[in-house]
Image 1 (cartoon, rainbow, N blue to C red):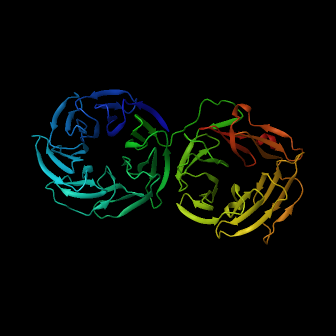
Image 2 (image 1 turned 180 degrees about the vertical axis):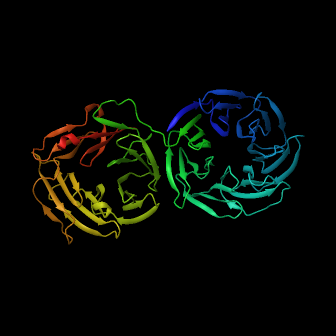
Image 3 (image 1 turned 135 degrees about the horizontal axis):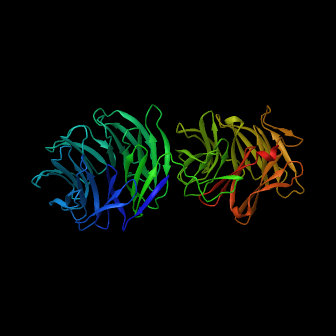
Length: 540
């Protein structure tokens, strides 16, 4: 959850954190010091004549080093806000700075294709390390103060303070070191983020990139349990402890690419962006929308994008945007519980279900139906498109089958083999789903009056032809959705009389994509809203 936003005069480029203070460098030439508890401004450091591109606190927090597009490096006294020393020599903008553990040396990387080492006492440059491309990142090794790392042209190299190449090279565009002495580092490449050991090269975790952005700011939590990296506008937080790294949080809110990211505690993050804001995030915090107070329903606020599919069980599972992110909310508490990344970027996800602690979701793209185990990050099955256009996809039979409603047919696939195991065709045209119970499916024709005029089939019967069902539906209520212009209105109808017994309130006229599980009716409502109605009393 975003707990606080601070607006800047220009785009925010860089952040550095120390002991409840965060330094922010931006394009207004100044450095802001903010209190991370209150978000209030503590100080403004003025002295650069162009954008501030990089910042780092000394290990004791008394000094701050900055690099700027004015081609200088500055050392600041944090207590007084004054400049201790300015280092001149670069002929291009200074993109990255770092200070040694003993506070004797500053390293700076520049777009003039050099890495320079500066003596803090004298202000002199005592080493220049030439590169073949501009230097995007420099950092002293937290494990060995005589070594430092640079990134240039997508290659990470290790150096000693005399300018000699030491250790292996790696491919990547952003790097962050763990705050302990284990030698772990995060490296963001073109397609994935790796966590590994700088000395042995052993890979601790491989995490998929969640965006088309290849230059992703990244960082470790102070307890080294979590890593965070960005994907364009979003922040993704992974738990890397144990043998099964998994995504636990996705933060959305920035409107332009994120430029810098730091942990301020094991459960809080700070980010800045080209959108001119600094945002403070709380991991695992509730995000209940306080404006809906009607007692008959719970209101959930999933994210900044419109939800596309809802699953009403013990949790509400919401694909919150087109970035392929799934978020989970508790129905009884309205608390946000966690998120998972899927590969369905830019496409609607059409069915989600929790099965034996696995999260299965189905999405439809390029004439293929795809089945994905989101917790394991594994594609389970890909199936060819049915003959008709697909209207709805659902997981049935405890996760063993995929139900596909088309314009004039129903087809059912085995989720593990990808083969069609049942199919029926309609005599009529437009239909809606009345109810799904295990492998039993009922439909109703929208043009047929009076209700109910429905058909049902049991796809669990042996052979390719499902058994035709007769008699009343097993539940007393069924879900009805009617499209009016660009709005879907949701209601519950009696299975015997066809009369409406519950109507989504008219003030939520843009309710879409409703789902019903026999107790809860879940509907998405405009951007940012999801409603959960407890209809258990109607079933008594």
